Length: 233
Image (cartoon, rainbow, N blue to C red; front, side):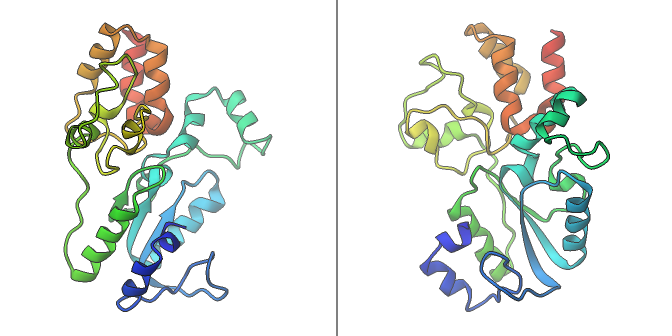
């Protein structure tokens, strides 16, 4: 849907690209393709097989959004006991559900757009880079940098549990700019000091359960080792 939200820009892009497979907009779809954009994360074996086919039939594969990038909210089920997890899957036979994993767990991913939802601006930048034969790079700094550029007040200093200090930038700090804590939907940036940040949160009076809850929301698969360490501390 973010492609359709680009409105006028997509017409310019279509001068350079042909959409061969788009179930939301096309009745007849074709394979193979040069670039496959994949949203979501597979949660059963049929979806895994579909993902493997997409990878075989595309030259480049792009993971779109939190679920594709990190497993996202569906990966919360991985932290549950199996009996509880089965309730989430509405009683599906035990051989069908699988743990929610990011796409890169199953296939090679060439590019990733983070966020829930991912940024239209980054989507435009990625497509432009591909058309021009340039390398697209994700932001390598935190949301806090964008907050500073936008002259936002620090929600962490105001007593809110904000994931901005360890979350990858690129969203233009939309949540903090609207007085809402960053929930980490854009994943953890490369140089984030996770244990140092946990110590800061504990010193500020946040409980382990509160920290584990927000760490698990969008990035459980990425942070499960840190979460396990925190539980043992």
